[in-house]
Image 1 (cartoon, helix red, strand yellow):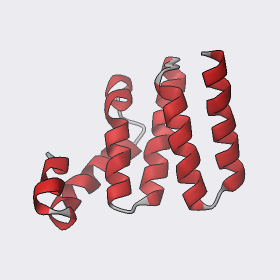
Image 2: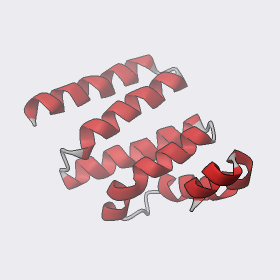
Image 3: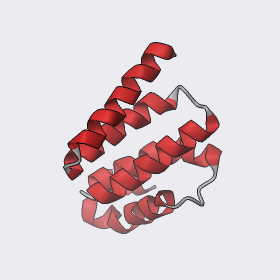
Length: 109
């Protein structure tokens, strides 16, 4: 609904719904299956809001959920997104580490 509102009425109209989505997925209380299914949309909502810290938090939860589940399909995507978020936050060493982990998992999987 928030993305439909974003497209039809603009960012200002959708901002509060997008913020709620980001907040929901920043918490550790998100269930495994919901987190793996929908956290990329919450990360996109953070990007639309220019909320780099929120984006980083959502991606961190996504990485942790994928690792805990042993889900090798979504893990490289989450690690790549984490590298991008960390780069925008200025933590280049951590970004390189996340990207290296992503590459290693692609080679293994």
